Length: 290
Ligand code: SF4
Image (tube, rainbow, N blue to C red; front, side):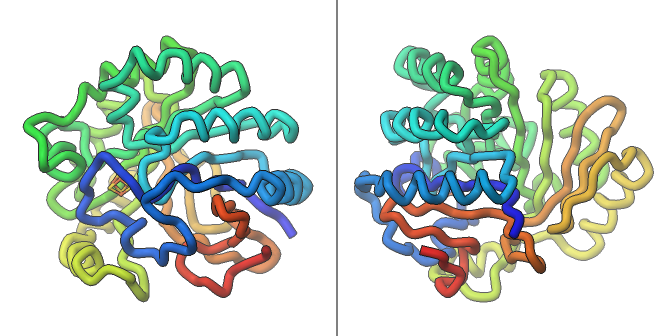
């Protein structure tokens, strides 16, 4: 059995953004609520040990909502993860808190860096602030200063990944992806991923399910994107789950999908839930180890 990533669910479903495609609304709660949960640290260690024994090189702190709303909990996870020496430790975030509450996060970021965090992955839908506002903060007049956040995190020593979700009307063509690649290169973003928004086979939330069905990429849009990457990218790596990494004029770009289904003897993600459950698929309750 091989495991790629140990995914750790921090916090709760609470989030400071309002994405209409929010995947956490589409997957079953599995014991995750809006309140800060108590972590089952015993099983957290079991998961870390299993993932590490099965060759996982990455531990990723993520959330059903926004992980940085529970920064103390992230520190606790980082403390325990030190025992397992994962080469890469990543934090997935929408970035809003980190950019807008710098004084509060300065000590946390220094602590997480000290304990081995390597990468901060910021989810986006565009290089343009207004386009990101429409998705992440439609209830506010402004989004955040994304270039400022990238610079801030670089100054703190972190690698930055921009994780772009492909939505029709946003980054939905080869030419738009080319501009996003240009933006990433300009701001020295180490890694860029592009993942088309995905409508799962079943959903817990009809509104979100319908939105993703109406706004996912068409076959033509996806072909145009893949054509651009095929013409301009040099393929560097290919993953079992279908993701591929390219170099485009010096910029790293990974094209991937959201699926976690295991293929053969490989589990893409071992997922730790705060109540102690260990699962290997976000969607299917049957995919459970503990
Ligand atoms: S940032 Fe993530 S958790 Fe928050 S609303 Fe958007 S998709 Fe959902």
